[in-house]
Image (cartoon, rainbow, N blue to C red; front, side, top):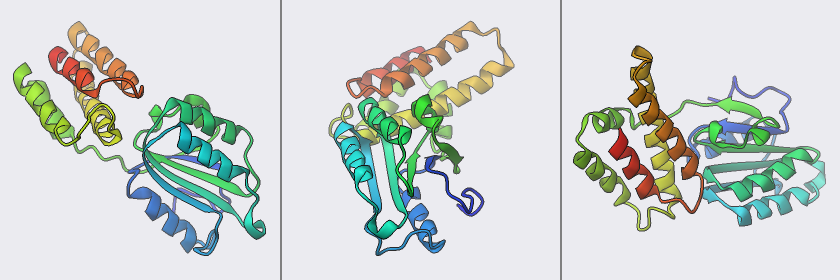
Length: 228
C-alpha cells in the first residue's frame, strides 16, 4: 500500500487521507520494515483519537519539544477521525518550526477537512477512500422525509450522545460526502436545476458546521433530510 507513496528520503510532515483506525498501524509496520524506525525506539509516538482536541494537541507539542534518543529519527503517527480547531492551531505551530529528524504522519478520513495552512506545510498522500454510504445515500435521496428521518435515527441510535461522539461525527461526514457526490452527479446532468444546486450548498454548510464541537449532529442531518 505504502511502497509507492513514500520516497526514500522522508519529508518532514504528511497529511494522509485514509482509514484513521487501521491505516496508522499499517503505516507503522511499513516504516519499521524499511528500517527507518525500530520497535525499541522510544521516539515513536503512536496515537489513535476519536477526536483530537486541544489537550491532546498540547501533549503532541510537548513530545515534539523533547530531544531525540541517541540522535535517532523520531516519528509521530496519529490517526484521528476529527481534529478540533484548537488542536489544529497547536499542530500548525509545530509544523511551522519542525524539529530535526522528526517526521509527522497525520491520518484523517478527508484531507479537505484539515486547515489549508496545515496542508500547505505537509506532503499530502491519498490512500483508498471508503465510500460505504454510497448505496445508503441513493436510497436516502429517493425516500420520503419520514423514511429519511428514520434512517438518520437508526444511525444516531448507536451512540449514547450523538452530539459528543466523534465516531458519529465521522459517520455523519461520510454520509454528507456520499450525498454530495450523488447529488453533484445528478446536477452535472442538469446544471440549471437551482434546487439541487441549493441543496448542495446546504450540504457543504452542514459539513462546515459539523467540524464545530458544539454543533448538533442530529439537527444537521435532519435539516438535510428535510431539504434533499
